[in-house]
Image (cartoon, rainbow, N blue to C red; front, side):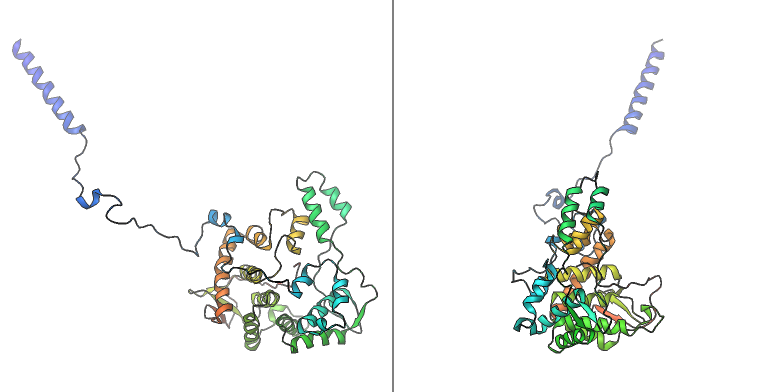
Length: 361
């Protein structure tokens, strides 16, 4: 009997020892002495995110008002900015007509813009700037009866619908006199007039019955646009940037150190935002900002930059706009266009046709 109990005891001890061997925690080698002092002997290295690669969530958190690479100095409002923001073009026209201010190159350009927009053109046919057709206010108010942004949208509509051409009912100009105003502004060296003249030449060169993508922009015209952009005139920048963003025949743009194919919408928006940095009127009273709030309900934008980043494109577009803006600013400031290369040849596969015309500004 004693032997039986002794045998059972031996078996239990052996079983317990085996269980300990199987279940005990693993033994780790001691850490080297250098690794036991965290952040005391060597700095912690953190990977910096690439400034040109942003996640979608990072794009959504962008504050475009803090993204300008150049501090915008407070300067007196330019004549062109006054033209773009004034609610009465007749008052500005009366001030410029037959006065020294109106005979400067910029004054002649502004008179040309006012008269082609508002005056009756006789003995010719002028291409007027695009103007969005507006709904009747009462009808708009009725459709917004339950809209939570109703008051904001109607206020934007009232601010936008200023009937800027009131008072021009008896003002007329011949096509020849209108053309002379623009030609004199170009001869005087106004950058906006020079850019607009190039755009007019390109549209006029379209063969009858053919699409605009059959028109070729020449190397000489591209060089002129680069010279115009060097003036840093924000109004000229909008027009020149619009021309360079279009899908001309035998023309594409490669941008950045990797020579990526330019995406037209992002390229166009980058020029718009860059113009804002140089003084283009892009605040809450910008015509496009007001019209998008009034007619589309996009009322959270407080500037044109806000609208272009948050409403006018995808997070991918906003990433490209930020990248393009930095590259274009460097080209304008330094004259080095090596990262904005024009390539001749067929359009890259999968690229659609983009033609941007003057719209609400």
